[in-house]
Image 1 (cartoon, one colour):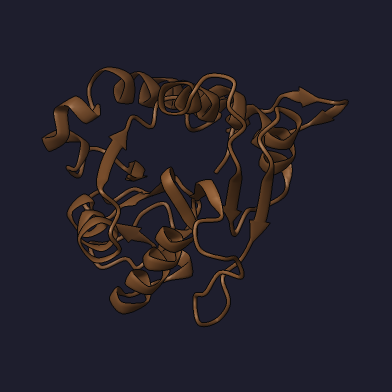
Image 2 (image 1 turned 135 degrees about the vertical axis):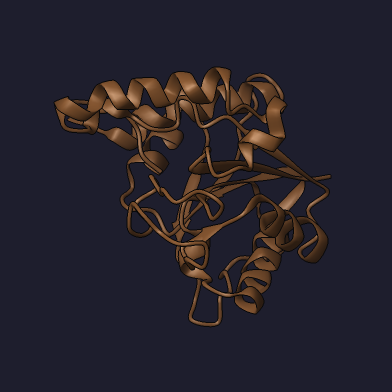
Length: 216
């Protein structure tokens, strides 16, 4: 997961900016105010997001699944688990169910899982998990129905809540000539491809799925 560059403790940190811009508003909506949320980040690019969460009072560990897609933690260890690498870590059906069940296992009751991934229905992927352009069989993406089948019906999460991708990407990291396109996309996500228009959110016109899974 990525974000706009921001200066945190004397260092430029895209991940820290993503935490403040995108993740903290989700915490405010879904967890009790002033609650310390124990977090687990799966397969991060770096430690900037985890570091900023810790600074804000939300302890965060990082890990990568084993070759068997297992996580080295006891059952119900974390309030919140997140990753932008789910389709890359598990590139086919059975493996995806195995990893989804592990994510469910380490999440506490009342906790949540956050995933960001390319939409298989769209020919464009902005997540960095694979080529920008792809076909409908690309392994680094999932469709919304596939995600629901794996994470809710197979793994056991009680509900899947699509989130707008507005604010997820930090467009000022793009080359200057592409930044206007980023701003247009953000407005598009904010007003058009929203979860309230699920038919459009899951369509080829929306390249990025951001999914919040609840474990009740």
